[in-house]
Structures are given as structure tokens and as C-alpha cells.
Length: 152
Image 1 (tube, one colour):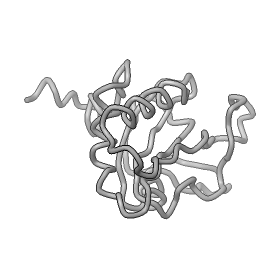
Image 2 (cartoon, helix red, strand yellow):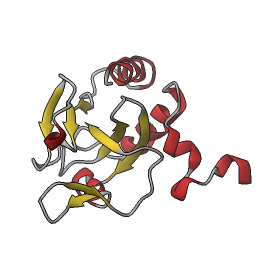
Image 3 (cartoon, one colour):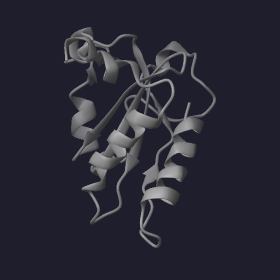
Image 4 (tube, helix red, strand yellow):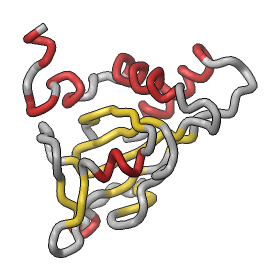
């Protein structure tokens, strides 16, 4: 799941960033539903552990169980933004809130911007939406499953 993101990030760094700047930091995969027992082997953290890069500015990636990238977003505080999408249910398992997804989210990854370069989050978000193939489904469809491109 993260291979395309790693390649795209390396290309972004080589092509668009001034040499010598500290690099953005890519997290590992975070599993939203570990109780289901069908995790991919590359999971590094799982619900209900704190979000990776929770208190940092950066971008986040939401994946379906099959590895499809659903969404790329940016946040000034990654943990707060992800908490707006995912919360505890009565049994302390992860539940989705505040957004309709085209598929159920299963994994999250993040990229933290270096200290002092938080403004780069917007550029990273737009870059990943444009270069990742296939493009993130829920960025294209828009909120509530509406096809924004068809209405413009």
C-alpha cells in the first residue's frame, strides 16, 4: 500500500524541494480494525494506539481493506483531523463518523512535515492527489459520494 506513496514522495523531494531541507516523514500503516484479524503484514500500529504524527502538520492517506487509496487530506494537527473521521464505539472498537466513504476505511498512513515547514502540507496534498494512480476515489467523488467533477 505504501510503495506508490514512497516512490511519489521520493520524486517530490528530488524534483520540487530545495536540497538540504529536512525531509517529510512517512509513517507505517495504522490498522483501524485489528479485531478482525485480517491485517496486512506491514501494519506497524493499530487501533486504539495514538495516531502516528498525531500532533504534527502534514498529510494523511486512507485506504480500504483491499489496499485501494480512498482519500488524501492535509491537516494542521493530524490527530485531530483523523479523530473527526474515526472514533470509539461502545466496545472501544473503531467506528467511522462524520463522512461517507465509498468503501470502508481499513488503514491510515501519514506524512509529517518538518518543523518550520508546515506550509508544505498543502503542496504535498495536492501533489499526491495529482500523481497517485489510480487517483484517490473519495477525493474525486467529493463529500457524500457526489461526483464533484460532473457538477463543475
